Length: 256
Image (cartoon, rainbow, N blue to C red; front, top):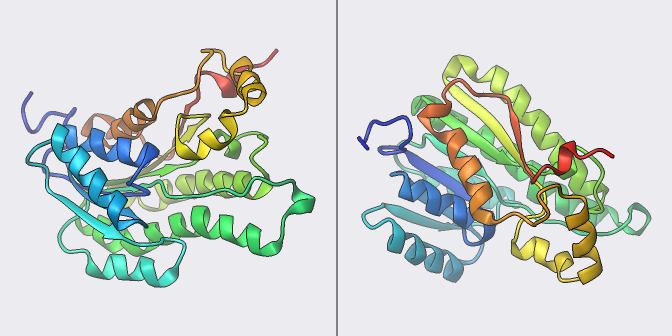
């Protein structure tokens, strides 16, 4: 397959947040295999180094930079952007967290923690990287939202609120930035085999209920979500913007 194939990312540079594990690592690996160079961002230096080594095994020759940063912190976001050199054609906002509690059990500080990690970091990465994406166009952004932003889940109100807002941010930016040749899309995963999901899926009864509500009858794999994200970044998806692609085994359309 030629380097300028619409099914390749050769010559493009992708910045992936939350890239040291789970969906972020799988996404970075997928993009590297498709020919992209990478900037991997996460909090832990050691896990980032391990992620870099793992990607180099499947994509030798891929140029990979690692940046340790906590994107819930303003100073870390600004430092990351200030230190970036060269073009960036792809931004994947994947970092996030959750505090699973009922509304009446949550504190205001816990609410803010979830919003800063999920929504504010996504908003700010888009805002801060806009000049670089514009100068590197055609460019694209993919926000990792959740089906919790589409319907009620037991993940708690702050998490669902943050993901719903990310989906709306996706729609707004897709329209605002179309004239700059920047596409903006989102994915909305259901339960995927990640460390975050594993905290609740280890409960056999909870896992059974999840599977009962999933038409495909299983939890998704990180590679399945990563491939959806990578597709939205491909030149092959050049007329797709403002969309939220559910990666959910049919959960979001499963009625009675």
